[in-house]
Structure formats: C-alpha cells, structure tokens
Length: 470
Image 1 (cartoon, rainbow, N blue to C red):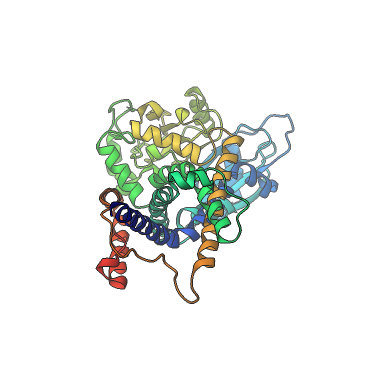
Image 2: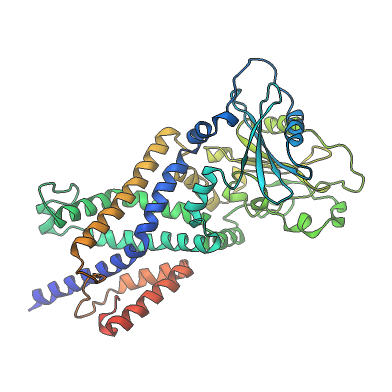
C-alpha cells in the first residue's frame, strides 16, 4: 500500500507546483515579452542611435582642429530659447561624432543640442524624454506608467523567480522519463500539445540560468525594492560609499561653509540620481553631491576643457557625461560608466577652483555594489562587446519564445470560456520546503509577499481550503 500512496503524493506535489507555475505565468507572460523585446532593442543602443539620428550625431572628420567645448556650448546656447539652462556636456573623443549638450528649457523639458565640433554649426536637437531609446528604457523599466509601472515590472521580476523555480521542479526528470527523452533535447517526432510541451520544457531549462541572472541583476535597479536594497546595503557597508566627507576610500574634501547660505535642495537634497546624466553607476546613485567651496565671492568658472583635462588626468578619457553647475554652489560632476565596471569613476569638481571635492572609484564600492556593477554591465550587453549583446539578445528572445509556447499550450488545453487553471489536488501535500521558500521570497521581496498572499487567499476563496495552492 505504500507505493500507491507515494505515487498519489508525488502527483499532488506536481499538481500544486503546476498551479503555482500557471498563476505566475498568467501574470508574467505578457510582461516577459515586453521585457525581452525592449531589452534586446536597448542592448543595441550604441549601434542604433547613430544610425537613427545620423544627421545630428555623426559628422565628417575634416582632420582639422576642433573648437573648444566652451565655444561649442556657447553656439548651442545661442540656438536655444532665452532662459534655457545648460545641464550636461556629453564627452566623445571619436572625431566623427558631434558635440552634445543638454539644456533645461523654460518649459521644464530637457533637450539635447548637437553641434559640429569643427565649424560650430548646430546640427539639430532631440528631446531627451522623447528619443527612442529613452522611451524603450521607460517601457522596459515601467511600461511608461511611472511609479505604478515600475511596481508592476518589479512584481514581474519577482514572479519570474517563482516561474523559474516551479518550472525546474516540473522539468526535473524521473528515471522513467529520462529514458524516454525530452529532457535535454526536445522530441521533434511528437505532435500537437506534446510537441509544444517538449519545446517549452527543454527550452526553459536551457534558459533558466540566463533568466535567473536577468532577474537578479535587474531588481537592484527597480523603483521600490531596489532603492530599499541600496539603503540596506549602504547601512551594512556593502553597497555604495557612505558619502560622508573623507570616509573610507572615498577621497573627499569637506564642502565650504559658504554653502550654508544656499537653498536646501542645492545644499542637502541633491543626489547623483537627481543629476541630468544619461547614465549613472548604481553604486553612486544615492550619494550626495557636494557644493562648490566659495559662492560668497564668485569668480570665473573653470572651463569645460579644463574639466575634461582633469578627467583625463584621472584616467577618464572617452564616452562620459559632465553634469554642469546651474547654481552658484553647483559643481562639475564627471560620471564615467564604462563597459568594464572596474573603471567606473565619479568626480565632483569645484566650479571655481577646479579642485576635486570627491573621487569615487570602483575600489571604493562595497562588495555587493561591485557584484551589481558587473551584473549591470553583463545585463546591458556591454562587458564583452558585441558577443555580450548577442548572448543577451538570444536569452531575451528565447524567454519571449517560452512565453509564447506557454500561451499556446494553455490555449490548446483550456476548456472553452474557462480560465483553464490546472486542477487542484484532492489532498494537499505537505511541501514544507516549498512553503518555506515562498515565505523567504515574500520576506525578501515584501511587494511579492503581498501578492502571493493575495493569490493564496483568492485561491482558497475560489476552491476552498482543501483545494488551495499550498
């Protein structure tokens, strides 16, 4: 009598896992497709934008001298409406690329102005918010729905963890089905729903590690949990540098006393993530931006070319942004976010003296932040160049294909006009390890925990306590 009971328990166990897999997939599938497509497009940003905006971003190399960046900034400013404030200079050493400056217009919108570095001709403008890659990024991170969309995408990432875990458990071969095939390679001789099942299960196991990596490397950038995780890592000295002047390996100088006369936002509220930079390393996003030392008797600013020379002296030579000071107490902030995270660097420079107030490099990061920096570079397809882009695209599009095969399997199985959720087991199996894992997941990701509790309650209300998913 032991064998039938054991088989019944295994069947109930599998049925429960399938129900959780179904509920997770029901929510995640359409969002995975969005994440996969937008992630693939954004991965190729370095190639796409110069083609898409070639008339503004690309110039002919005349092999002659280039105008100074301050002259180019003046040319760009002359083309903008009165009251527009320059906020960013993007630095490129490629002689076939135009100079880019970002302005905050009186309406509050930001606009990039592109200038020919050889003759100072203004080539055109682009809205920072409306450019294609910004839209793709907003869609990827939050469905272009602001905070609400960011929370939805965060939940999608968390529920993907459930989908991966249950998917692996459902795939896990027994001795009998291991001999029958369909474990590591799909059985292409099958037909109908069985063929789709093999394609889905085998493809899923090959993509599981990539999917897990994408989720774990993407969640630190999420709008809710990511911010809390960053604060927690910092309090444990594992995340970004604390930002207190002169602490640890952050080579900093105390801000000047004159900054006390400035407004509170410029003095204490400005963080790196608040600056108008195209990209900021995760590790420094919440660090405080210092003030320039002498605002009481302002003198001439150091030039942008001087800042570029200072950056080069510190090993920063190409493809970085300089946030420009827009207040008497403002600083130049050099943000270098290269493909190799070990070269990441952030400099805050006094706008009057040219003195480096804060210098944060990769060695200054906590261990967790260093891991996240590597994860981010790999996640974005940057670390190994084109090969990294291709691998990321293959994983992303593979996950989109899995979502489609899962949908087809459900469509072929479901009864007409019904949801078609897998039937609940007659007797609920213990599954203590599984319930413990879900509880831990809910504690680590509280928003995820709230939605798991909601699903559990709805399932109990719909099917009764005996038929609940766990």
